[in-house]
Structure formats: structure tokens, C-alpha cells
Image (cartoon, rainbow, N blue to C red; front, top):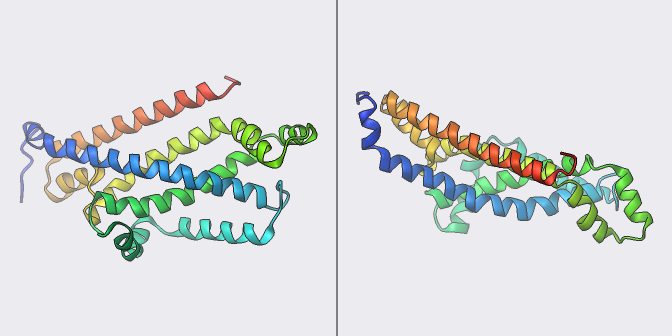
Amino acid sequence: MPGDGGFARVIDVLPEMLAALGETGLMVLITVPIAIVVAVPAGVLMWVARPGGLRPAPRLYLVVNATVNLVRSFPFLVLLIAMIPITRLIVGTSVGTLAVTVPLAVNAVAYLSRFVEQNLLQVSPGVIEAATAMGASKRRTIWSVLLVEARPALAGSVTIMIVSFISYSAIAGLVGGGGIGDFAIRYGYYRYETAVMITAVLVMIALVQLIQLAGTLTVRRLDKRL
């Protein structure tokens, strides 16, 4: 059984820790843009098509809403395993950091789509009615009014999604995805190296705090009420 080794051991595994941190960063850099590009239109579509929306389409809303709920109902571990054939088809392998970004992106799209829909529902109906009364087309109303008014909430939702990815990086280790969470488990749980695990956890906490701070500052900058 590997021993603790004290905090001197942290120096020895620093290259591995930095590599794991880079893997987490790669997951976020690949997944977040994909999630935003797909989830924002999907969320807008649900807002438009829902009963009482800008252009109600009950059947379309039912299909999109059910799909989002279906994906969100899967625990990430189950989704990770269930998507192995699809992941292998898309990236050519089911193992590694690049492979884990596929189920991460699918999961992120489903969650962010729901967030986007809820964010848009928080926009005052009076703003939409005023834009429509002034002759704005539906497309212009969505692009120039709805999404502009919802920007602070959308930025907050993206921040929440990114923070969630940090915890998912621990599960990503099951398919060799790596990440700082997986690093903490491998050294803290499997090797009983307490000092290394504590350091990895502190790095995760610092990373989450930095992301949250950046998200909060972005929300404040976008919110004209603040």
C-alpha cells in the first residue's frame, strides 16, 4: 500500500497535477463553446414553441422538451457508458480526454438548454410586447430584445455549467479522461496519499472560485441594473 509521503510528495507529482489541470481545461474549452452554440438556439426554440410562446408549436415543444428531459435524467456516469459507441464513432476512440468531451457536450447541451429557457422566461413580457408593438419582427425581437435582456442570467447559467464540469472530471477518469478531479481520486483514494489529495482538492476549490468570480463579474458587467 503506498504511503502518504508528506507534502514533499506533492512536488514529485506536480507535473502530473499540472497535466490533469490542463486536461480539465481542455474539456471546458471544447465542451463549453459546443454547449453554447447548440443549447442557446435549443432554449430559444423551446421558449418560442412553448404554449403561450411567441409562436406556439405544441408538438415541436413536446419533442424538444422530452429530449432535453431524457438526457438530463441520465446520471453522468450512465450517460458516459451508454454513449461509448457514439463516442467511438465521432472521435474514433472511447478512451481519453477528447473522448469524454462527447458525453460532456451532450450533457451540457441538455442542462444549458433548460437553463436558457428558464432565463428567457424571466424576461418581462412587457419588453417583448413593446418590441412587437413597435413593429419588430419575431427574429429581431428574439435577437435584439430577448437575448439582450437575458444576457446576465445566461452568463450566470454558463458559469454554473462550467463549475459542474469540475466535478464531472472525477468521473471522466473511468474512461481515461483525466482531469483534476480524477487526479484527486487516483492519488487520494487509491494511493492513500493524503497530502497530494488535499492539494488537488485545494486546487479544485481555487479553480471553482476563480470561475465563479469571473462569472459574477461578467454578470455584473452585463446587468444594467447593477
